Image (cartoon, rainbow, N blue to C red; front, side):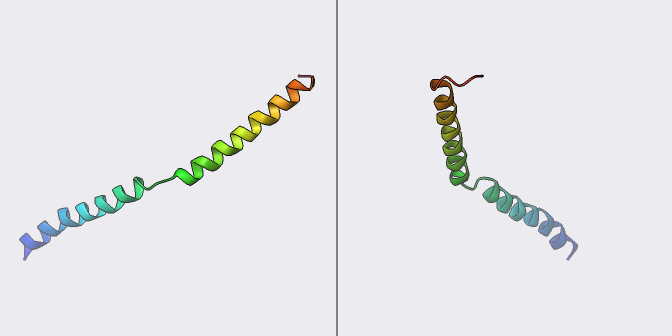
Length: 56
């Protein structure tokens, strides 16, 4: 019975590592797209301010 307990420890660690690995590798593209879109709007706004001759 003690041998079975010692085998369950690495097995449970492997299952936990697999769950964590799947969570860490999840796709986060929607957040990146929204951030890049906001940055593009910021750059466009800054270009409009400087092209109108606004003071710096």
